[in-house]
Length: 195
Image (cartoon, rainbow, N blue to C red; front, side, top):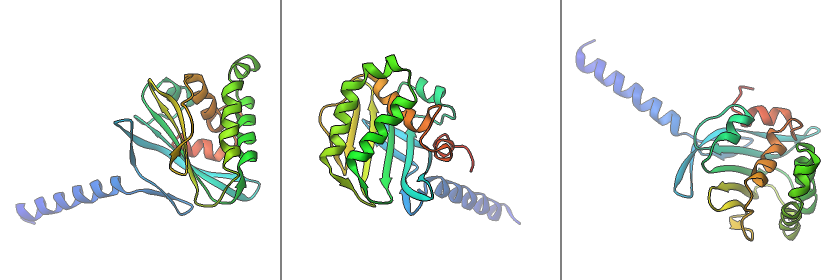
């Protein structure tokens, strides 16, 4: 193999590697891009997986961070923007989803910390109640934007004023990453652990 052939082979391998990195990850037919833009920052997909309830797939979730992190403590320590992106895989009553999220937050916090967040929890529950139901393919995002707060976007539309307290976003993440997560396999997937 001559020098030009070796160069062409190396260039081809580099191009293939670069293309592989840019490919979206597909989870239950839902594509999660490797990178997303949030508030002028590029976030990378930390992990994505499926939320199961018994044997049923309920939704997929992808966690985007400024850099990869593999423990809840490391994720909490990151100061930049963060995004939890969720796509429904089946129809669910939105009021029920809001209640499940509230319970998930409560299950992963001590009582005193949770009681401070009750006004925000009530407002979040109302956001979901207003939508009546979410069907397969509907998406929502929960974004932490430093200096702004937590922004909940349902079907592409931001919902009301941001939740200002950083503790609120961390409590929401606790639903999936806390000591009593909604789904242990999903927690591992979001933390980027191999299945």
